[in-house]
Length: 279
Ligand SMILES: [Mg+2]
Image (cartoon, rainbow, N blue to C red; front, side, top):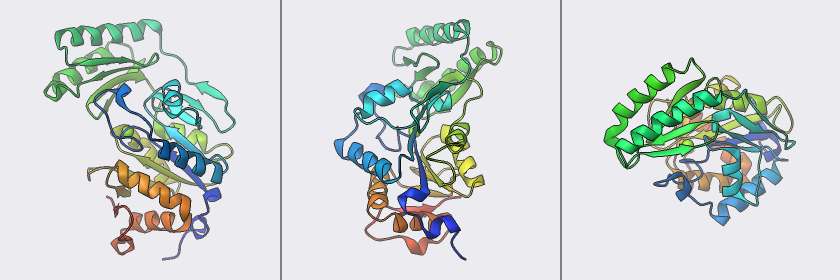
């Protein structure tokens, strides 16, 4: 099988790199505020961004302001709140139509009431979305999801339920990480490049599907599970190793992803992160 024209010359300037944050670049912490960005990771992302002409974007469930605070002084193109808001390659900020204040208030009230009944639940107000974390009370997942589905159904479609790892969110309807990545790929510096998306959670699936359709590379981070992603890195540490390899030897790093996507296990480099075909 011959390589695609893109991957014949996978210098950084031929790539568009899209990175989820929590569970992909950063270990998931007990609370959303409990994470920090190691300086080495910040420097790696800066080097990859510089080397690729700015084609490295964060695609996260966090708000962009939150991402900027975490990665400061580095600011990258970003999609926040699962694609509801975005900052493109030229630094321009935009967002999708706002949900009504009434819908957000009803969602907030329902979550606060649940959290008062179950103090181990944590409500996170992301301004245009609300998250209810149950990391400290995983046994509450089923009733929490059922309650939030009921709330979402009562809001006339303005907010929709997004499930994640130990969290359920009510977020503006219609935004997905897939649409966010598609929007980035419409304009410089991302347009015309080979898209690579790394993510770990259910909210990353639309982005996996999109890059698959475009002939790009979709990478699930974490243990095997049903996913549209075509290859897999074991954990956050493997992601960081792969990013280091990408900076040092883009051809080899992309080649290993491409081979893993095609189901060729023979390409595993003993010294590199575990990279597996997936699905
Ligand atoms: Mg994640």
